[in-house]
Length: 436
Ligand code: SAH
Ligand code: SF4
Ligand code: F3S
Image 1 (cartoon, rainbow, N blue to C red):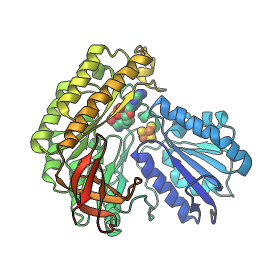
Image 2: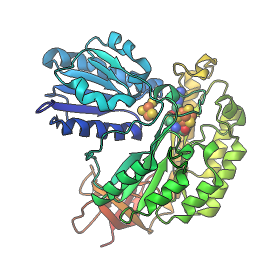
Image 3: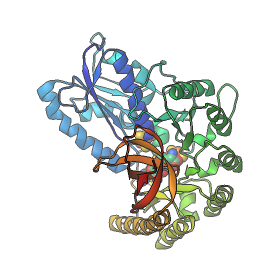
Image 4: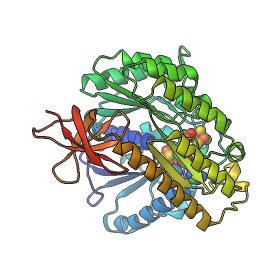
């Protein structure tokens, strides 16, 4: 039906969107369409969108604005996918009269039909589903040949007061363990070495058939011979149990690396965010993790300038960052999001104070990263080489801590594991030499 048509996908947002885009592309390729690297000569342009922060939506709107001319010149079909599609639905069609389709995450399997000549009409298709929607079995064309994402659950029941995700991805839906195992087995047979299990709240995963949880799932994936590294994200600190820390520590394939978003170091702020844990609970979990896995690499998300955040609250966040010594943090200025509870709170931290706090936090974290990375000089690390680096004649890969390692090699390498001696680096990446 889409035989010979050229399409282009632009992806914004998180790993789940990246993974969804690879699946959407594969669905269209299966119908005979061809994927292009730029939108210029394409009959179909798809944009997979993120609604998590105000800036994400502003970026999308300016991207959509630029497509107007494209539509006028080439008449391409323009399709909006993802979280903004689900959140704004018909409103997007009226704001951008040259958009053809708005399709939510639970309806991607309908895309080949929606894009076919027999169906084509302007519409917003954004129904909710209660249970997991399994896409047809197909060979997914992935960006990497060695590292793959597998979505294990979607949606969130937590309703943090700042977060729009429960309104874009709906309530939690869990993928059957058997389907996850089958996808992992197929990936292993095609040469994949690393699996990253994805979900908005992976620690609440329950197999709809047997009730097995994430620890059991990790065990099952570990049994697949060829898979050597397993990661999972995102973990909500409230649902991260001591049993999970034990499961991580006792499986040789589960990487000693964890993204555990704290959002704030102040109990007052955490309570207003409805995070359901205290600073003390969080730090207790960090201390289990460090005692079970002294080499663990931790990362986090932090919001600065949440309504009512005082200087003292912010100092507590800085102190927590000093105490935990994260390998990496993702930090954001708070922005109110539609439908969330915090949108009705007074957004009372002035914009310039939010910026000052963000700069201070990032400066403090940069010092930590420079120190931590400096201590790695001379170490030999196992690195998953992903391909050529954009800079110079180097290769690029990631170590177990999920840090970027750019390295030279005397012999030509294909993607896969390689031992690398760390010879330098800054706060955000490491430099090395392959040990041949
Ligand atoms: N499921 C993940 C987070 C998904 S959103 C979790 O539970 O942690 C990714 C990050 O975006 C969040 O961790 C938070 O730090 C940030 N974020 C979400 N909503 C935001 C908002 N309204 N303003 C600023 N940052 C926000
Ligand atoms: Fe959003 Fe909170 Fe759910 Fe994460 S846990 S997706 S921050 S509501
Ligand atoms: Fe963004 Fe949706 Fe992911 S809002 S962060 S693309 S779940």
